Amino acid sequence: MFKSLLSVGGFTLVSRLTGFIRDIFITAFLGQNDLSDAYNVAARLPNQFRAIFGEGAFNAAFTPAYSRVLEQGGNADARLFSEQIFSMLLFSQLVFLALAYVFMPGLVYLLASGYAGETPKFALTVTLSRITFPYLLCMTLVTYYSALLNVHRRFAIAAFAPVLMNIAIVGFLLVAYMFPNAAYAASWGILVSGVAQLCLLAWSVRRLGLLSRIVRPRLTHDVGQFFRALGPAVIGSAGVQIAILADTQMASFLGSGALSSISNADRLYQLPIGVIGIAAGTVLLPQMSRLRAAGQGEAAFASQNRVMAVTLALGMPFCIAFLTIPDVIMQGAFMRGKFDAADAHASALVLAAYAVGLLAIVLIRSVVASFQSIGDTRTPMIISLFALTINIGLKFVLSRSLGASGLALATAIGAFLNFSLLAFFAMRRNLMKVDDMLVKAGACTVAGALGLNLLVLLGSSSFDGFTRIGPEVKLIVAGVVGAIVYGLAFVLCARVVKFRLSFR
Image (cartoon, rainbow, N blue to C red; front, side, top):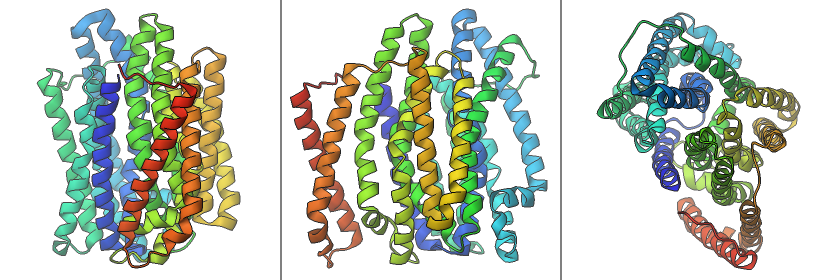
């Protein structure tokens, strides 16, 4: 399991790092203005729908269903089941794409109605969205192929695929002079990357002999069970995406650059979420599903606690850094070209607000696996929708006084509420059990966090005095020194509490 976790996490890290380079190019070419706002909406629109369907929802329904059919009926029945699902996905997405092209102004209005009063900006956003939206069709099929590979314990290719998007966008930005502006170039990069990712995943599935044919869709018993599980899972995932939609919608009324501030902060915020949280959930769900199906409940608990221990330990330094030195991070990451110090500070405020809920978000996927591994997608859905209601209510209140950072803070509070309720009900139903190893890991993580806070408290004033070095060097120095201090504090605490995590 840890080999798979390191594989997924490692390739996801490569994806996030190349994504960071991509974002440097985007902010340098576009800045933080109306052009970048239009591009961010066009990029977010297909990803909004993809995230509702793909980030957890499809896996939650497909993995247990496919595993059950494979175990009970063998390869032939599993192949028939997967081809039914593939064909239904393909046909539904083609219809949805055709409708989206016709009603694109309405979709853009749904995401950013604040642009409606600015005719050139709204028109540009609609045009760019028509370029990027077919990316959704490609990524829906990529999600299907990824789930198929994950069930067969092939995690690496699916984790690597997003790297192609980053490469494509950077490549198109380098030839932006061939397009009306850089936003057009980046939008075409998104579309081309979707085709490239689909080809890569299809090739990988074909090598395993699992490439699906297009068949006539039939609502068999297994397909019906899949959709009964998929419905609540999609609604649960939609809760998170509705919160992001609310951020985008409200930010469109907060003035030029507000949406870009949220997008820039979110790009860094998603680094630990993708590398740690999503990677952990991707590997843990198949593992817990297999163990529970085999009647090995205690082994499932042990696997979950080990993954949560690693997730907590790796997530904490990001949380502390985002809270204590957000300006250093934003300046070192993006302050070049058209992106100036004022833009960096505006984005830093949003990043610090997001950081309040970071630990909850990276742990949520591991806790949700408690329910999904037994085919229960209804409970996480109900909890997600309840947390969403509180989240959106807080957005209206906090955005009035805090602006874009208020929207991010509401998201963070909603994430903590979601995580707390999931953990409470999972333990109440004996689907999750905290063991001594996780408690010790938590204690060592707190010790590491205290070490980082002490470092910031003692070193921030002297660090600010280094005005001759560039922001990139400051960020690198802060990262290296912070990692050393956190690691030493964690190891010292581990020796005191006799904590040892075996990777065997």
